[in-house]
Image 1: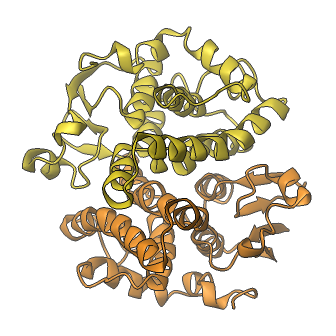
Image 2: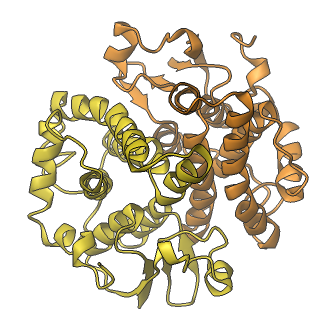
Length: 214
Length: 214
């Protein structure tokens, strides 16, 4: 049995839950309250020195970290259904869309960064929200263009099968909502989110559906 | 012939140059001065709406973006020599090490973020350097632990063959040097960097070796 060490609101946790659900993989859910620094305990750090969620623990105790590395692992070990297209260029497109979110948006907007803005730069909620919104729009503008203009975009980010980019996009939108990001400039992204939100693997991965949701 | 649209000092460009060199792939080098906003021209944006380097242009004009997506594409299309280990768990380890740098360090410390700190938070060079150093140490502490404690670490990040994690690490160290990051707490990382720096594919990828280096 797989054990997922995670937090309901963590966007990287949400994307991994969606991937696990799409693959039809069961897992034990272990929750860590980030605000209470529950990933900074000696126990957790022994498993994962970076002190970050999510961590996927395999049967034999091996702890895998970094959500995208874990999803690639799942794709290799449980190839059916695939989360990446069959052709190399399609895979490059899907990974690029996923990494736009994973490398350009999310790292700037996670909890520890927002905490740094508050403690070191004296930013209040408004300053943090302006920062959050800035980086979302910076990437969502080209992301919308890439999705709207490509014949490869289908019901989801790439064709009519949900995959890696959709996992990242779905999780990011939940984050955006917390910070009241205006989504009106992004009709294609919104359409894809609505389509994903109808699918049980995504719906089950959503933050409000988790046992530790507050 | 491949065309690499990039910038000598860009860390994501450096990691991709290292990967191309390791694969023995030739490419036309096109330089874009980020400080002069040369990736914000209509021409460049038509190729790559995000306006970011690196972009790898294939023979037929297809433009691939996001350095890690491009490296995975190279790995699939030009598998020899491999940049990822043969076993799924090894690949998960190497990708996790690479993503620690690509998703936790680099996104916080690139040019546009430092510019935001200056213009919106009124940070001078000292404030920007403190920020840069903070996020490097935040990830380099666990990265050093993961590398130092694992029997899988060899001459390089994973065994004695340089790969994906090494490309990311090598590029990040060049960035760290510009911001005078104290590397003394990271003897394993320093040892690996020194070993990589002896290899021609890495040496040739280093920022000072590029035609647009200033």
